[in-house]
Length: 280
Ligand code: KIV
Image 1 (cartoon, protein in one colour):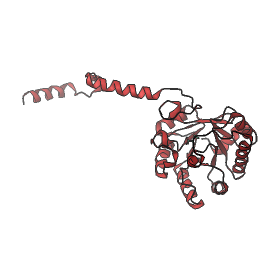
Image 2 (image 1 turned 90 degrees about the vertical axis):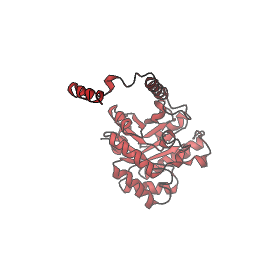
Image 3 (image 1 turned 135 degrees about the vertical axis):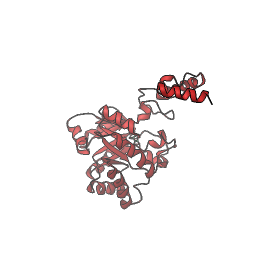
Image 4 (image 1 turned 120 degrees about the vertical axis):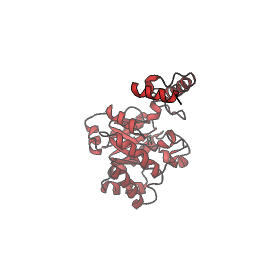
């Protein structure tokens, strides 16, 4: 089973860290069977599963349900749970209690966004309480209302140096890895080279220590906004729609269900049944 420590070691062994989001049992099981290193129960679930317009609407109760499903399916990968918006901002006590709920369910770490003074204190406290913390810098979706939109971060030297400074602070508070979201590749490269802990990029180019994408984007199951970095490997939307359409057609044309798809009586019982129903 992969742990936060083993993930950290991958940076030194120069092994690329491969991460994906998942929100349900079977996707987590399949990702595990394919050898994924990290499964993130991302609060992106809000948009791609719940149909919300931002991650800020996701609740603790919702994250618990999706986390339980993923934890039932994933045995080997490190399962990281995203702390939902406002589940960790109102105080260290409540944040630790909420993070602890995911850990008690079997998660291996939690992810929190940002690096202000409070988040730094919290990271130290969680780590000291035995709760590994994955940081998240660059574009941080939970701050969408203050950032003002899906904007690429670190677009100049000063911004990049600020992200690096934040990343170093999170590292010194005990974070075991850092997601870098939506920034130019050379900035992510510089940040990655100047940290001891691994960086996991999403829309941050090829020089990070690992990569993460949202599962619904890569299988083509989400037809809302699709960021340019989300490579699409399959067209699940078309596959789902076609299957449903064919199923409905088969009901209409009488080919579903076939004899093979129906249960039958044993011969003797069938005869008894026929003679009873015909003599009625
Ligand atoms: O919620 C999520 O899916 C994430 C990834 C984009 C890193 O935070």
